[in-house]
Image (cartoon, rainbow, N blue to C red):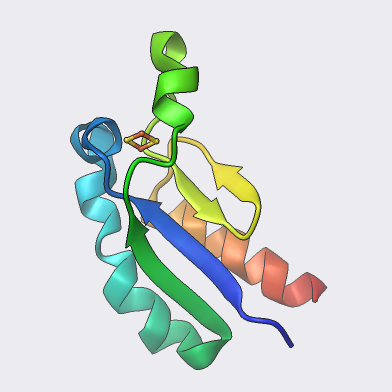
Length: 86
Ligand code: FES
């Protein structure tokens, strides 16, 4: 099974919009999913500049899917859904 890749945006916009909390994911994900999921911080994913006027930051990317207004719960839920469907 391929690993799921999770990229937590650590760019300024996402960081100030709540992304700071998302750094917990870097600890939680390996503990919860072991080597099934790879998690890393990422520089600006480019989403904030596309949607600057109705920003849905913070963003997290899971494989090719973007999670808007990401929270720890939303991200874990999305990972669970993906693991269930693979
Ligand atoms: S700072 Fe997160 S998408 Fe730009």
